[in-house]
Structures are given as structure tokens and as C-alpha cells.
Image (cartoon, rainbow, N blue to C red; front, side, top):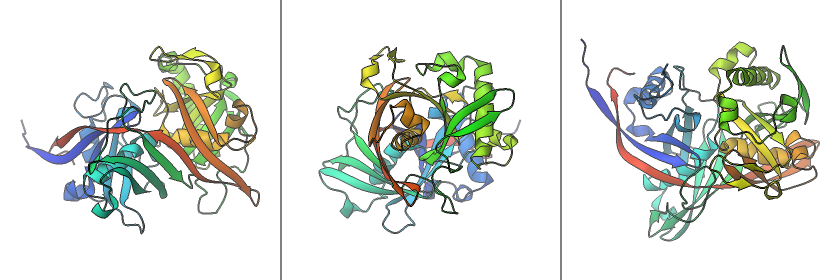
Length: 395
């Protein structure tokens, strides 16, 4: 039997928003993994414990859900007027790939905290007490994000009384600004890849649906809940236990990805699970969240349920929340219409774990919708730090 030693890689395990991930400083990675390529991907797969045919990631740091199968690589920024470069890798549970196609908005809340604590923000920019503004360059999507991180006695403040539905314990509030969150592409087109606020999406053997395709925060396909047989009040067990429903959502997502121009053929969707997201919206209704908390229709502007990596998300992805806020601000999208239509700069939406407020300001300039920023609050906390171990022949 062959035997190889394990190597130790400095790492930090953090919660950001309603997600968890393994954070690395770029220069702490083994030399072969400091550049993009197979060695880096193989290392991260082994760290997380994928691919796992049992679906549990028992032999790694992953938590057997899309929210807990994540990796982050950070470095001092190569961009002017930025503090830190943020690269996000989504690791599927059952596939030997790392998806680098999009951002993780939830873990963004932890990027600023990590950057301050690990010397990636110049000391003169960190107040002794107050708010540290961390300028993040999101490498996956080539966008700027600003994190407002509370600092007490020169240290990142992680505890506090800010409550976030989907997270058990209160913590310190971190406000996140996603600047120019729309992806307008190399051709200068608008954030709606088809040029329409609402399109018809035809999916063979499934149906034809109204859809809003938007590239803001993360490429997202929005459908009306009732059009696909749902109320918008569903929790994870209502959908994730239904294999036929999940297969139908994946087929809709694949055909939507083609219509958005993200892929050329539906066969490519399997290797691009992180983007686009697929979500369904409905007008406000009362329901009971996954924690047993009652959410009254009067508390929210609309309901949204979103799938991530093939499963209904337990709360809401941060990047999808940006897409929701952006689409809600633009009259005529399915999201805006579900919220009652008209002009608005913020919405509070209901998700499986509770509610979330997100703001966005949209403006029509030269027949093109422009959104300067989207804003939401999250929290973050270091769970464990030290080294993660992997067999030396893993990459």
C-alpha cells in the first residue's frame, strides 16, 4: 500500500452571511496552486472533500450543501484604489470541477474581515474604533465591492446584535455595497442580455414560461411561481425531496442559460452549475419559515425562492439578492411586478428562512437601464483558523 504524508496549508474557516467557506491567502498556497489551473482545482477539491458519490463530503471541510461547499482565495489587490483581490471558487459536491464563473455575495461579508485581520489592508486605513471601509476587487466578475466592517480597539468586531434570518446567532452588522453590479458585457449591452425585461422561455417537454433574464450580482433567471406550479411559500423539503422537480428546474436553467448567451448548448450547463441561478417569485403571502418563525404577508413586498447548485437554497444567495433588488427597481420585470410594480429603491422579500431587505437605485439612461449600486447588510465570523491538511499527492 502506498503512503504519502499530509501537508499543512494555512487556512481560515469562516461564516459569511448564510454561507461558510475555507479562506486562503494566495501566497500561503503551495506554489503550484498559486496560479489558476489543475493543481489549484485539485487542491481545493481535496480540501472540501469532492467529488463525493455519497453526497456528504465527510472526508473534507465541505458541509454537503451549496452554502457550505465554498473556497476563497485573497491577496493584496493588484488594482489601483483597492485593498484586496477576492477570488471565489464554488465546489460541487458530486463533480470533480471548481466553478469560477461567479461571485458569492454572502462570503463577501467575510472578505473584508479576513483582509483586515490578515494584513491585506494597510494599517493606516484601519481605525482604532469605528468603521473600516475595505475596497474589494471581485476577480470572478471584475467588479468593485465595498465592505463596511466595524472595528473595536483595532480589531475586527464580529459579535453584536444584528440578526440575519438563516443565521442562528446575532453578530456585528457588515454593510456591503455592490458597485455597478450589472454585467453589461464587452459589447456594452445592457444588464438584460436579450434586451427585454420579460421574455418567453421555451423548454421542450416542459413548457413555455415568461422569464426575466438579468445579469446583476449574478446571472439570474426569474420565473413566476404560479406558472411552474408553486406558491412561492415553499421550503427546502418541498422541492429538494422531489427529484423530478429538481430535474425540471435544471432543464429550465440550461435552456435559460443558452437564451442568456452564457453557453452555446444545453450540454454545457452541467459543468456550469454556479451560474446562472434560477429563482421564482410571487406576490406576498403569509407562511412559516424553516425556523418556525411566522412571516406575515404585510411584512414583505414579495416572495422569492432560489436554487443554487441544483437545490433550493435554505435562505438566499447574496448575489441573487443583488439581482432581486436590481430587478425590483426596474418597472416591468417579473420581480418588480410581483412586488406590486412601480418605482422603488428597496424591497424586503421573503425567503425560506425569513426576510431580507436589499436596496438598489436604477436609472434609464439613453434607453439603457443603469444601476450604480446595490446595498445589503450581512454579518461574518471566524469559526476556526490554523491549517487544513491534504495528502501530498492530491494535486
